[in-house]
Structures are given as structure tokens and as C-alpha cells.
Amino acid sequence: MAKILSVVGKAATARLLDPAGQALLRAGVSPNAVTVAGTAGVVAGSVGFAARGEFLWAVLIVLVFGLTDVMDGAMARARGTVSKFGALLDSTMDRVADGAIFSSIIFWYLMSSDGWSAAAGLIALVAGQVVSYVKARAESLGLDADVGLVERAERLITVGVGALLTGFGVSWGLPVALWLVAIGSVVTAVHRIWHASLKSHP
Image 1 (cartoon, rainbow, N blue to C red):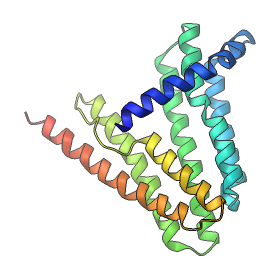
Image 2 (tube, rainbow, N blue to C red):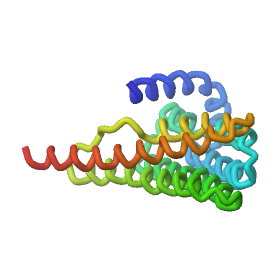
Image 3 (cartoon, one colour):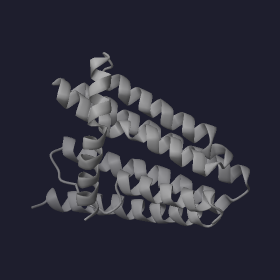
């Protein structure tokens, strides 16, 4: 269900952003430039605001620039320049953006002497990267690891909701979200490895 909602959401967002993408193409802006600019915006919003505990502004900025993750692909398809390098760049920038978001949150909780929340953020960051790596590595080896409930979209949405709650004064919102993502990501990583092992021994 989560994957279905993610696909539908991306399709709807792509349609809404299509006019802006077309305008950028007419202005000579490449999809890859949009990818890099979007990541830079996410990093700036994370480091500039989340790392200082200003979560409302952080969520707003990350959300706005995060929309480029949908726009760049639509632009590439409209331009007829979909490429393997573009896919590589997009995946790499996703890892950079995720690292900036979670690292900034971890930094804030460390500065706030909340070690448990910082630990949850660290587990979520590492486990989330492992979830993505297991799938990519399995596919490169001809194995199937496309399973699990907590993928990138679910991680970011959960943390975003938690950050909004904390930004509005519900202090436990983000810590709870971080633990949910941490535990869910660990379970998903193990599930993918287990699933790939079954597929490797028919």
C-alpha cells in the first residue's frame, strides 16, 4: 500500500509541477541542474534551520526543494534526455539530502543533551542508507530485494510529520518519529536481506 500511495503521489505532484518544469526547460535549465539545486536547498534548510531546532521552517524549506526530486525526472522525460548518469546523480543527491536532514536533527538533539533522540536519529540514518544499499546491490547481482514497508518516502514523511509536531510544541513528536523510522528501517533492511537470500536459493 505504501508503494502504491508513493507512486500515485509522485504522479499527481509531477502533473502539478509540469508547467514549472516546462518553463525551466524553455529557459535552458537542465534536469541535472535542478537535481543539484534541489539538493542544495534541502541541505541549506536542514543545516540552517533543523540543526538549530527551527523545525517548522526546516520542514517548509525541505518540502519546497524536495519537490525537485519529482520535477527533474519529469523534465528529463519531456526533454527526451533520460540517462543512466541522470539516474545515478539523482540517487546520489538523495543520499546527500537524507544525510543532511538526519545529521542536522542528530546535531540538534546532541546540543540539547537528548542522547536518546540523537541515538534514534543515528540509527535511522544508518539503517536508512542500508535499506537503499541492499536493494541496489541485490539488483546489481540479479537478486530481488524489493520488499519492506519503510522506504525513503516513508522515512521522510514520518520524520516530517514528527518535526511539524515538535515545531508546534509537541516535544515528543520528532523523537517518536525518529524511533519509528529507526526500528522500521532496521526491520526493512533485515527483511530485504532475508528475501534476497531466499531468492538466491530457489
